Amino acid sequence: MTNDKTKTDKGRVITEIKTLFEKEAGEVFDDEYLDEIKTNPPEEPHFPYLILMAAISKDVIDGLLTATLLGAFFSWFFSLFLGLIIFMWLMGKLGIARKMLLRWGIKRAGLTIIIESIPFLAVIPTATIFVVLAHNRERKIIQLFFLALEKLQKGGI
Image 1: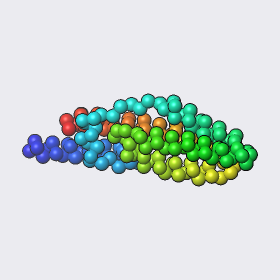
Image 2: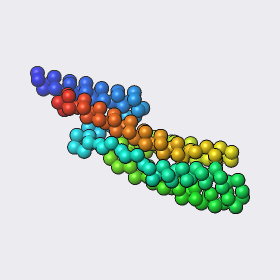
Image 3: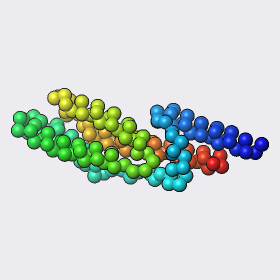
Image 4: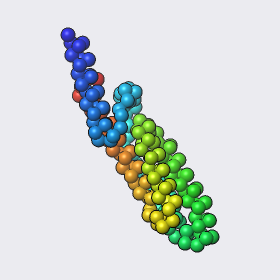
């Protein structure tokens, strides 16, 4: 009898966690995350100041240097280089939130590339916006993992 109640409680807690992730982040909480958050709990991410500076530099280069033909040529190389740094930062995210963050980031990176390819929209600071949104998204996912861990501990799982 107690074993059945424990299974029911565990199922209820896991269902609550899955619903929380779906509702708050639009993400699926896989069962593989259960062991991971218990054995290797996530850490609060630090703000990426250096990546933000690279993003600001990329946006300034995109906005200012594209005014002339020669500037457009050089800005393309610098933008590509700085864009790769930002993308590698996103790809290099470690820990439990990586899978969810990458799914989110790849979609947004594609939108950023499309916006920047339109001539007069290149002045929009898309890289800076992307970095800030990616950091906020990571924080939100980590907070959801903290809530999930708390629910698991309260449920005795």
